[in-house]
Amino acid sequence: MSATIPTEGLGMPVEVGSIDTALKKLWEADEASTNASLMNFLVYTEDPQRLQKNSAMVQGLTREHACRAVLIAMNRKATEVKVEAWITAHCHLAHGKKSICSEQIAFLLHGKSLGRLRNTVFAHLNSDLPLVFWWQGEFTDLFEERLYRLLNRLIFDSATWSDPLAGFRRLAEAREDTKGRMITQDLSWTRSYFYRLAVARLFDDPMAQKAVPEIREVRLKGNPAYRVAILLLLAWVATRSKWKPERACGDEWTLVARNHKEISVIFEWDEEAAPIAALVLTAPDCEVSITREAGSPHLCQSVVGQGHRVDFSGPADADEAEGLVASQLSRGGKNTLFLTVLPRFMELLELASSKER
Picture 1 (spheres, rainbow, N blue to C red):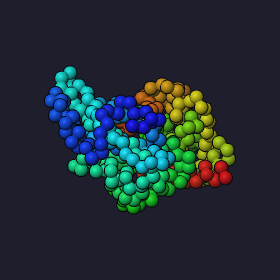
Picture 2: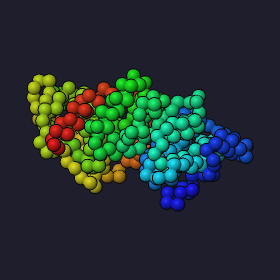
Picture 3: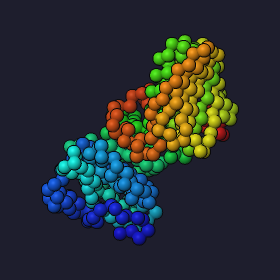
Picture 4: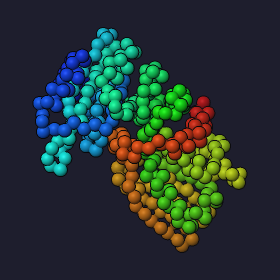
């Protein structure tokens, strides 16, 4: 067992060649528990310090999503090539009676042998179940064709990428290689889910509907750590409104509508703010706004103009990755809206990149 990487709580240490036998004995020893599994859920990180935290997150996720969980931490800086493994079960009461359990296998891979991720780990998946793969952090050289062709669903968080433009280009190559069979889900996109629902709800209001062609300003406020989520939300608004990016100057951008009128986009960043803290769309006679205070579980929503005011309150998206992943697993689907928005989002990323050069 590694002396520097925390592994407490990962379960019983086992030899890699004995994992299946050890799992069988685990279930035979507890006749009160039922082994439930709807998917293979694989969590991959190249930060070994996250292995223990990932196990705790999986324990929470299995309350609603039964699975065979496989945790992988790659210690690529190690000079010695070896594999450590642990098994455990995350159990939860069903109606106060029998325990429903999801089994977990955790691997700590030391060294730079590239083939071990596929050969060692994928040998321990349940072949009858779909594979959901949560890749944490940047896409590295291990994110390659022989890996992602095996995935049914890829979850990632572009907020963690140092170069989002390069990351999304790499993702596009992977989708092309898999001919679109691999469903992709970005947690940065998930962060705007309830914002998008709120916009759709507010524009059911007749005054807001009438104001759509006259929108001249969009104000976006958020935490700078989640710039990608803000840009994805803007890309969705622009796609639905058929606006195209024109130019960027600092935190003031310009988009152009189909009628050739310009829309001013103003960004405001606050490190103490919620990931997405505000979206305000302004026309001469109407303002539509959605705001969220940091840590609040609710969005404040309003339509105001010409003596008319409508206010709503609705749920907000989770801040933590665990809650966002749970939301993705619950909704499922092919994430076609994300793919529809992606071309406009890439244009915005290109604009942001040219602004920074």
